[in-house]
Every structure is written in C-alpha cells, then in structure tokens.
Image 1: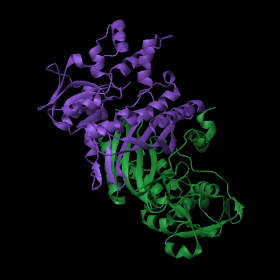
Image 2 (image 1 turned 45 degrees about the horizontal axis):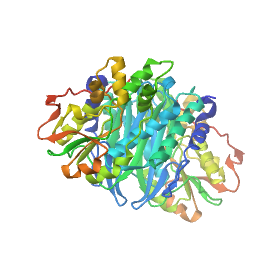
Image 3 (image 1 turned 90 degrees about the horizontal axis):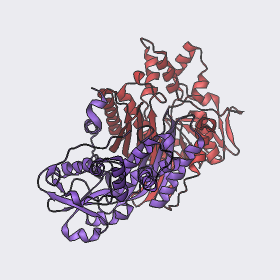
Image 4 (image 1 turned 90 degrees about the vertical axis):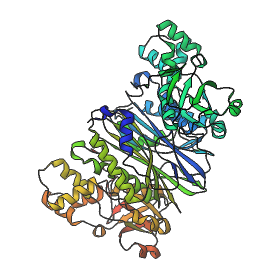
Amino acid sequence: MRVKDLGEFGLIGRLVKHLQVEDDDVVVAFGDDCSCVKTKEGLLLFTGDAQVEDRHFIRRLTPSQDLGWKLVSVNVSDVVACGGKPKWGFISVAFPQDLPVEYAEGIYRGISQASREYGMSVIGGNTASSDKIVLDLFLTGKTDRFVSRSSAEAGEFLLLSGHTGLARAGLELLLMEKKEYLPFEKKLINAFLRPVARLDLSDRLSRYAGSSIDISDGLVADLYHLSEASGVKLSLTRNKLPVSEELAEFCRREGKDVYDYLLYGGEDYQIAFTVKGENLKHFGDCYPIGKVERGSGVFLDGERLEKKGFTHL
Amino acid sequence: MRVKDLGEFGLIGRLVKHLQVEDDDVVVAFGDDCSCVKTKEGLLLFTGDAQVEDRHFIRRLTPSQDLGWKLVSVNVSDVVACGGKPKWGFISVAFPQDLPVEYAEGIYRGISQASREYGMSVIGGNTASSDKIVLDLFLTGKTDRFVSRSSAEAGEFLLLSGHTGLARAGLELLLMEKKEYLPFEKKLINAFLRPVARLDLSDRLSRYAGSSIDISDGLVADLYHLSEASGVKLSLTRNKLPVSEELAEFCRREGKDVYDYLLYGGEDYQIAFTVKGENLKHFGDCYPIGKVERGSGVFLDGERLEKKGFTHL
C-alpha cells in the first residue's frame, strides 16, 4: 500500500497510533489545531505548518515576501482557533542550492513583517538544502483556555469569522497568468497570497466559544472535522453564508458556482466556531451561518453536504 | 548571488539579520544549539532539525525505524548540549505519494522507540506531500541552567564525551553497498544510522560545564564555532584524542588517515564542553582532549587546524 492510497487523514490516523503520549501535562496531543501542554506558565500551544514548493506555491508566481508572510499567518491561524496568541516561532528551511539569495531574504522579510504584526518572535531556526523550497514553521502560543474542535454542543450557534472562497478564486486567477488583473481580481489574489490570521478573535474565542476550528481545508471539510470530533450535526443555512463582492464578480465573469467556492474553497484562514445564544452578542462582526444539533454530518438547508476538501496544487 | 555562493553559515547569518527579537523573555535566540526562553515553568529550550532524503539519507540504504530514531536523537543531542532534557516534540513530515505506507510507519515506530528511550513525547504533527521524504522535528526541552557555546573561558579544560569519526566511516561503508559486513563494520554503520544522544550528560553539563556544543558538524568545525562564539583559543593534544578500535581497524584496512576521521567526520552526536579543573572529577567517563586559552582558533599540538566541516551527501 502506498501513501496516496490512504489519503492525508487516513495516513495521519495510521501513523499517530504509533505515538503514545504518557505525560500527564499534555492536555491535547494529536487531532486538534494545536497540541496543548499544561505548565506553570499557563497553557502552552504547539503547532506547525509547512509551505512546500509546487505543492503550496509556485515560485515564479509567488513574491517571496508574501510567502514568508503566509507561512507565519497559517500557523497563527491554528493558534487563534484554539483561543491562543502566538509567542515563539522556530523555523526550519530547506533551499535549493541555486536559489537566488534575494528570494530567500525576501521570505525572511515577510516572516519578520508578519511576526511584528502578530506580536510574536521567530527565535531560532535551522537550514538544510533540498531540490525545492521547504519552509516549516513551528509555533508556540499561549492561551487561558484551550478551545477544541471536539466540544461543540447541540443548541449552540455556528459562526463564521469572515468570507470564504476568496483564496481559491485567487489561486485560479494567479494560475491564469494574465498580463494585467482588475482591482477585484487583485483582491482575490491577495487573499490567496497574503492571508491575515484572525488574531482579533483570540480573546473572545477563549472566553466565549464552545468549540472552534481553523477552516484552512475548506469550510465543509473542516466543519466535518468539527462535527466528527464533537459528535454533533451541523445545519447551515444557505442564505446566511456571506458572499464577498469580489467572489460574486469572479463567479459571474467566469461562469462559476459561487457556493462551490464558499463551501469547498480552502486556505481562507477564517475560523468557524460555536457559541451559546447568550454569547452571540460578543461576535457582532462574525456571521451566524447555522446551528449545532444532535446527530452527525454537515447539512445545507436540510441537505447533506458532500464531504470533500480543498486539494493543494 | 545564489544560495550555494554563501554556504550554509553565510546564508544563515544573512537571513537571521531580518529577524529581530523584541521579547525580554527570550534569553537566547539564534546562534546556539537551542533557543531559550524564560518562563514560570523554568528555562524552556527550543530546537529543530530535519532529515531530508538524498541529503541526510538514502532511502534504500536506510531502515525506516533507524531514520525515525535518528531524527529524534539529533534533536535530543542539541538539547543535551545546552544542559537540558527533552520534553515535547512536534513533527512535520512530507512524504512522496508513492512511498510504501510500511516505510512511513517504520519511521514512526523509530520515533516512538527513541521518544521512550529519551523520556519525551511527540505530541503533535503535520503532514504534507513532496517528491522526497522530509522529516522535521521541533523539540522543546527544559533546563535549570542554559549552557552556551559562547561562554568558554581561558584556563578551562576541553572535554569530549566520546569517540568521533565513527559515523563518517559508517556512512562510507554503507555507500560501498557490500553484500556482507564484518562485525566491526556493522558497528560503524550503526553509529551512522542509529546515533545515541548523550542524555546521561545533561544534568552534569547544566551543573558543571562552562560551555558546551553538539559536534554534529565534525569535531574541528564545531570547535571553531565554540572558539569563535566564546572568543577563545582551543588547544588540542593529538595523543589525547580517543580512537575507537573499530575506526582504527577501518582506517588500517582502507588505508585512511584516522585523524582525518576523528577531526573532520560529522554526525557523531557527541558533546564537546569546557570545565574548570575542580570540576574535572565529575566527568571521569569523558576525554580531556585539550585546554582553553586566550586567543583564537583551534590548534592540534600547536598547529592551527584547517576550518572545514562535514558535508552531507
């Protein structure tokens, strides 16, 4: 059997079985957006995410600074999803020998810029060489309360922190390699190249959310992760899903189905989370898109949604 | 300018300049075997090291379990060098789609075995796909006192924790792809495939060492790192350098210079460290190979040693 026969999640499931954690200070190991450890310093979060050339990005279409920015943002988003704030990063990079030094420096400038923006520091690193650029960031964060994907409860509201589908439209536009892009197209491309993690939500999620997940794999794919981890049914209402003007314009011009992008596009780095009715008031800037119910699966206007995710390049 | 024109350390120096750390809790950032952060839990150490296919290992010559073991050991060695003990690991892997699942599982079995051996837990991970296997371990440790490579002082003794040169001889033997190996050859190959981090030294280094460094780049290369970071001269005595029987046998049979291996072989994961005379008694199992003096450079019997390191495949 080959890795491709199992798929990413099948493979993870099989590999993780080999790693038994026998440490009482470890609160959450595998299976959530972050791992979590109890220390005298409070709850520490650990996460890590990579950007691999030709898998997550194509070098000639990706400004180096954006790449560094995105590497940090995708990791910060995982910390935010658990109600935390990023603190210390450690970077591991592998560069091809013939990579222009300017490109490598640009990546680091982007990392630096994002670190400042998110109030964290990259404090160590390691380099190796490789045929393709591999960037791996490990991030440690802190939280007062760990918000898990496995703690949604029937009766809660399901909220979404912002628009989805933009990054996928942006990636498709980027791959068209047009000579010039219209302003709305540039916005979509920017959503793909330079996502912004929702650090503004950390404190509120930690205080008021029942459960939470980073929806980088696509809204429906990650809602299935939340539904399965929590053992609940999620019922979405179609006309509550926020549609950005730019995505609507893109779909109109390209003859695409906007809901396909909203539901199945990935890499938006928004957060889906659940809250009790009394706490809705703290999230006036987010979109209530559905309800948590007893049962299983993810539904849109009563119809079960196909469980499929975003696939990388 | 290309990455290859700068070399690994030139590149790191240039990239790290972009990352300013503005966090008073960060005690050590770049430039040592680990980064170090002050917390209520004590001093936390962070390190990370990768194993990249065709750079650090050749798949068909590397049993999967050994690969997992080595990934953990090389990271633990960095923590030990700073006087610490490993606690929590986070693993990031990229596998080719056609990799047999058994190979991936073997890697995880090796990781699990090493984690138990070293008293730590791998508590989270992330997978991606890639043309070649990339294994990246990020490791957090704890120490009571951070032992740096930059704090050696004239008058101290220079000690080495064990034999060097074995891993390089082992790699060369492995690359010969002999049908059968003699017992002494198997030992050398094992030193390359399955190094053991010197966790037994952590407490003593933290208590009694003036400075310390993991010599994975080769004895002389890393002694230069220590010498430069500390601003001291290191004077080695040739007949104090420990020569393993197996390495001597290998060099005799292959017509090689044993000192070339001792001084310039890499990946042995021993520790070089300095101690004051009064503390020598705590390290009866280690080898006093020289002295720390005022000045700069690394010398053997009065002659300046060439500053060159171990190069990967």
